[in-house]
Amino acid sequence: MSATASTTEFRALTRPQMAARLARDIPEGWYVNLGIGIPTQVADHVPLDREVIFHSENGVLGMGPAPAEDKIEPWLINAGKQYVTLRKGGSYVHHADSFAMIRGGHLDLCVLGGFQVAENGDLANWATSENDMAPAVGGAMDLAAGAKRLWVLMDHTTKDGTPKIVHRCSYPLTAVGTTRRVYTNLATLDITERGFVVLDMAPGLTFENLQARTDAPLHR
Amino acid sequence: MINKIVQSMADAMAGIQDGSVVLIGGFGAVGQPNALVDGLIEQGARDLTVAVNNAGVGRVGLARLMDLGRVRRVICSFPRSSDPVVFESLYRAGKIELELVPQGTLAERMHAAGAGIPAFFTKTAAGTLLAAGKEIREFEGETYVMEKALHGDVALVEAWQADRWGNLTYKQSGRNFNPVMAMASRLTIVQSQHMVELGDIPPENVHTPGIFVDRVLHVPYGDPSGF
Image 1: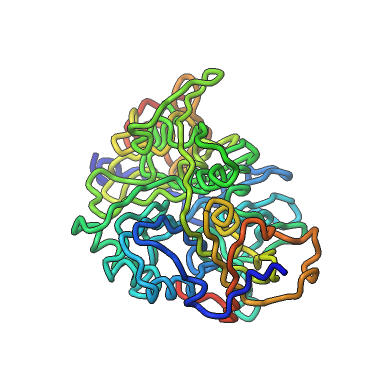
Image 2 (image 1 turned 30 degrees about the vertical axis):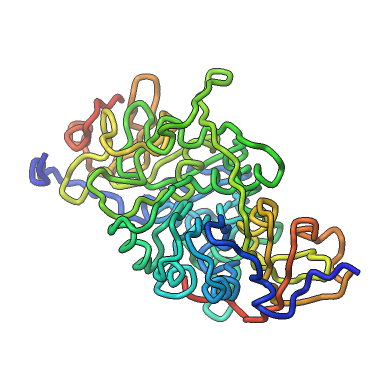
C-alpha cells in the first residue's frame, strides 16, 4: 500500500493527541505503568486531580511529572532514565518487588509502544528480524505478560506506510495474546474474539480508508 | 565485635577469583557501585560473568572492564544504553557472550537465589524467543516458563547509609537491583555514601539487613551522573 493510495482528507492524530486520547480512558484509582517513548507522554494528559498512580519498573510507585530544572533529584529517575518526581504518597521498592507488582497482576494497566500488534492480541515490540544490534528487552516481556490489561500506543503504519496492525506478527513476539486495545494516530481498536473492532477514528477518516492501511480485517 | 567496615579498596576486593559470577547493582547510573567496579578493574580478576541491568556506558567502569577483555559473559536485560560502544563492538565481534533476560526475570532469579529457591515458573517470555530451550508447564490453563535461580560469587552494591553490621539504606530509586544482589551472593561488597553508628538507622527503615552483607567501604562520591 502506498501513501498516495488515498487522497481522502483526514487529520491523523499528533503524538500529544494520541497520548491525550488514551489518557481519557484511564479512570481514577488505577495503577499504571507507561512504557518508554510515546506512552510516557500519557501521564501529561491525566489531570492531577484524577488520582492515577504511575509505576516505574526501577522501583518507583507514585511517580510524578518531570521536575523543574532547579528541583532535579539526581537519584530519582524513571525507566527511561529521565529525572522524575515522586507524588505525595509515593514509595520506593527494590527491583524484585517492583516486578512482583508487574508479574503478580497488580497493575491495572500497562501502556507500551509497538512494532506490530496482531488480531490475536500478540505484541511484537522488542526486536526486528533485520536488527543486527545486540538485542535488548528490558521489562517489556514482564509488563506485556503481567499487567491486568495491556494497551498499545503506536503509529498505525510505519513511515513508509507498512501496516503495523496485522493478521499475525512477523517480528519476534514480546507476549502472546495479551494486547486488549490499540491506540494509533488513526484509530482506537479493541481486540475481541472477532478480531479488531474500531471504537473511533481520526477526524475525516473513513472506515474503508482505515481498512486500506491495516493488514487485518476490521470490524465495526 | 562485628565490624564489616574495610579501610581500603584492596581489602574490599580481596579474594575475588578468576571465573567469578559478579552481580553489579544499579539501573543506569543510579545505584551503580562505580568505585567498586574500578576496584575490580585494579584487582585483576578475569574470565568474569557479569549480571547487570545495562551493559556499560562509554569507556569507563563496566565498559572498561569489558574493554580490557576481562568479561566472558554478560547476563542482562538491556545491553543498550546512551553509549554502549564497547559492549556492541565486542558482541558483534563475537568476543563476549550475552544472555538476554527479561528484567523482572533477572531480578526474580536473584531474589530466588537469595531465598534458596532453585527455580520458579513465570508467564514472562512464554511463547517468545527468550523461552527457547526452557521447560514449559501449564498451570490452570496458562503457560509458564521455568527460570533458574541466579547465584553470584560476588555482589557489588551501592548504598546510601551503612553501619558496621552491614545494615543498609538506599536513596530513592538507587535501591533497584542492589537488595536482591546482596541476597544472592556468597560475598557481598558494599560501597556506601555515608557511614553511620550502629542503631542510627531506625530498625523499621533498614532496607538490607546486615545478614546479606560482608564488607562495607566508605565511598562518599556525591551524585550519580552519566547515563
